[in-house]
Image 1 (cartoon, rainbow over the protein chains, first blue to last red):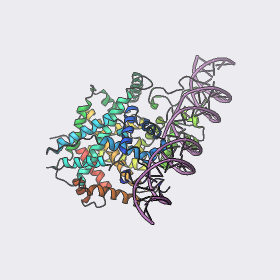
Image 2 (tube, rainbow over the protein chains, first blue to last red):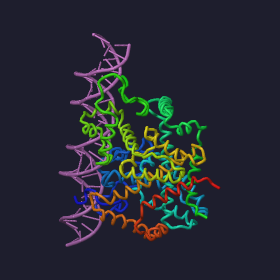
Image 3 (tube, each protein chain N blue to C red):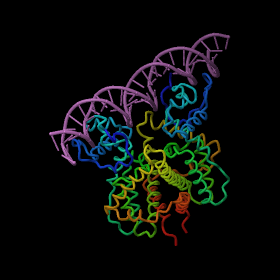
Image 4 (tube, rainbow over the protein chains, first blue to last red):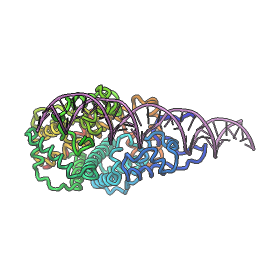
Length: 237
Length: 237
DNA sequence: GCGCACTACGTACGCTGTACGTAACTAGGA
DNA sequence: TCCTAGTTACGTACAGCGTACGTAGTGCGC
C-alpha cells in the first residue's frame, strides 16, 4: 500500500515498469494515443479519466496505476503529439530553419487544437520536448551567442506562436458550431463594438477598425510575425 | 421565462439593468470584486459559482441572473483587474512607453497570478480592454505604420509577456507549497534531466545546462525580451 | 392597476477527479 | 522451492462542479 498516493515528481522520472506484479495491460503510449484521439475528436473536455479508461476497456481507477494524476495524463498527451515535430539536418541559415520550426509548431497546433491550452511551461522536459529543444539549438548553431540567449529565443518564439495560434483557433471556433448562429453572434459583437467605438472614447480603435480590413491572410501574417521576432535576435552591427 | 437560456454574445453587450422587476442586489462590479478576491486568495479553482454566491450572501443560482455562464464570470474578472492598468500621457518615445506598458502588465499578472490562465484571446473587448488597447495605440502614435501592424505589435507583446510571466509563476509555484518538499521535487527533476542529458543524445542541451547558470535576474531578462521584441518593429532603414 | 419581465433560490442531474478497500497476480529473496 | 512484498485491477464512494428547471415574490411600464 506504500506509495499509493502522489509522489514527488515528473512522470518521466518514474520507470514505466518495475519488475514486480502482473504485466501492465497497456503502455503509456497506448494511453496517450487514446487520450489524444479523444481530444482531437471531442476537444480537451472529452478527456476524462473515465472516458479514457472506457476507451481503453479498463476500469477507471486502473488508469491511476499508469498516471498518478490527471495532469500527468496531459503531460503524456503533449509529449505524444510533440513526437510529430519533424527533425531535420539544419541547413546553416538559422533564420530559415527557425521559420520552419515555427511553421511546424503552428501546423501541429492546428492538427491538435487543444494543444494551446496545455502549452503551459510546466510541460517542458518530456522526452520529445528535449528532442525538440535539442533540434532548435542545433538550428541555432550558426547564431553566435550564449545558450541562455538561444533558450530565450526559443521560449519567446514558442510564446508568440502559441498566442498567435490560440487567437486563430478562437476566432475560427467562434464562427463555428455555436448554439446560436455565427451571424447573430458576430452581429451582436460588431454592434457592441461599434456602439463603444461610437462613443468617441476610443478614437484610435475607431481608426483601426475603419482601416481597410480586407480578409486577412493568416499565413502571411504569421510568417511576418515570426520573421520580425527572429529579426530581434539578429546580432547587431 | 423567455431568454432564460444562454443568448448570443458577449456579456458586455447586454445591459446590466433593464427597468423591470426588483432591484438587483449586486452590481457586476461587486461580483467581479468578490471573484477576484477569491482567486487572489485561493487560486482560480477557488472561484466556483457556489463559492462566489456564498461570499456574496446569496443563493448559488441567483448568480445566474447576473452572469449567464461561468465563462462570463471569468470575463468580468479579467475586466475588473484590467482596470488596474495605468494610463498616462504618452511621452513621444513609443519604445519607452511600450516597455512601461509591458512592465505594468507583468506587475498586474504578478498581483493576480490566475490572470495568465484566463488570458485567452476571447476576452478581448471588455471595456477596460478597450481602454488598454486605446492607450497602447496612443503610445504607438509616433510609430509610422498601419493600425493593423500596431495591433499585431500589441498582440505579440502580450503573448510574449503572458508566456514569460506564466513561466515565472510556474517556476515560483513549483518551489512552494507542494505536498512534498521543494528540495525533493527539484532533486527528482534534476536527477531525471541529468540522466537524460547524460545519455549523450542531447549534447547542446547538456552544454546549455553546463553554461554558467548564475542566479537569473528575472527582471533584467524580462526587460531584455521586451526590448528585443520592440526592436523587431523598429522601422527598417 | 394589471401583467409581465425580472429577481431569488431550492432541488436535482450528470459529470468530474480521486481516496480507499479488496482481490488477483507475479517476480525476487530465503 | 515457497513466501511475501509490491503491483495491477477495479468497484464503491465522496465531495465538488456547472447548470437546467420549477416556483415564488417583486415592482416598472403600459
